[in-house]
Image (tube, rainbow, N blue to C red; front, top):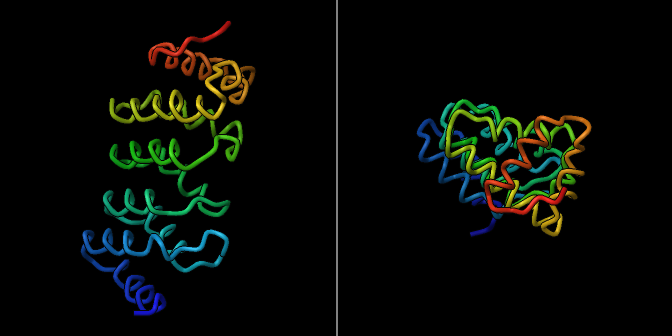
Length: 176
């Protein structure tokens, strides 16, 4: 079966009225997206599901499967304010695994960690702490000072203090 036929069939299913069908269609389309094509129909549907779908399971699936590029990153990061905990938790896990913090503006980095570390849900706070201590810190060669520098301590001292406290809670030695 040609990829075009599969793509067309799944693009129809991604609009199905049953959320489970939409989730399966999202999963099926994951290898057919082209992050280099700004007009990729699969990515366009993922972005639509990510921002507008009424089902948190569908938003989560789209969040997990969407390829990150300049067009999708804003939609992905916007899920930090999703109404459902499961989607917010998935966001931080996705960012930990898929995104270099340098792809975000300093303000976006600060907003993400402030929202995540202050979230009302324990699971979201834990997921955000893992993003900071296992994802971003690893990118900075486990140098907490470099991580705090990437967050620009002078811009938002409270958030950077929250990050430093999180690193300490995670057992990371913070150099002063």
